[in-house]
Length: 215
Image (cartoon, rainbow, N blue to C red; front, side, top):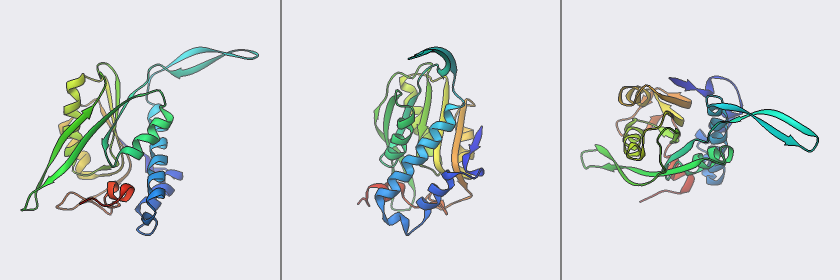
């Protein structure tokens, strides 16, 4: 299942428009803040698909029957670009477990590249709901490799892959290479992908825009 959140008009589209804007991008603090805001919105929308249960809540004047989350998810992110996005989701799922994975593109002289997964800190995933976030879902290879690496820590019962901007090619790739129980959430979907696997129009390198250019 693919869910494109930006199809409905909301403040989400305002934040994404600022993240795309080449002039506003010069303010890295605002860029990070906007990714965090988008992460909060994504967490709110994903929460509607999770399991809830009734619970008695004692107030100063009585008892209220409320629906509360039955269990907390595990929030995972690909560092470094995903850190503010992760924090936004963690602001709402504030009791969630967390996982962090490093994945980067190892470029070759001929212009090709391969994705390397090196570091992973992850709790037990067996029977849990996993929310795997990466601001840019480009080719889909990073998400696939990270997901498969995380399976060493157990089999989640449900998986939500969430991105700020996704490419059509990346979504199609994931649909072919991950199980059917994976729901893909994208705030915006762009059609074009360059030969170097950058989304067009996209917004550029999210990690560089958030934290500065790397060598």
